[in-house]
Image (cartoon, helix red, strand yellow):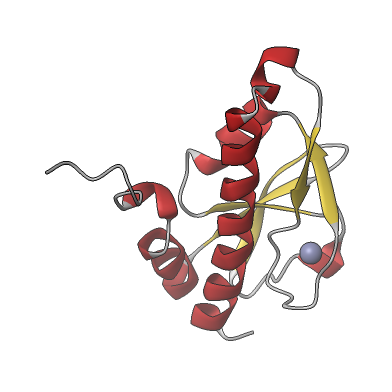
Length: 121
Ligand SMILES: [Zn+2]
C-alpha cells in the first residue's frame, strides 16, 4: 500500500464525513441526543462503500487526532503496513496511521486549515 496515496484516499472520506457532520449540525440533529449517525468508512480502499454508525461524540473523538480514521470493523479495512488498530468498537474500529501516511494525514486534516468562509480579515 502506497502510504501517501492511502492517506490521500482516507482524507477524502474524512472530508465527506466532515461535510455530513456540518450538514447535520446545520439542521440541528445534534439536539436529538446521542442517536447514531451514518458516516462513510475512512479506510484506504478507494472503492469502499461501507458505512459506519456512530454518534457524534464518537466521531468527534476520532477527529480530535489527525492520524485517526474510523473504518469498518474488519481486517479487510485495515492496512497494517501504514496503520495500526488503535481502538475497537462494535460498529467500527479506529486506526492510527504512522510514518509517511501519518504525516500526510496530518497535513491533509481539514480541521488544521482555515475553513472557507470562516477566515478572518
Ligand atoms: Zn472501508
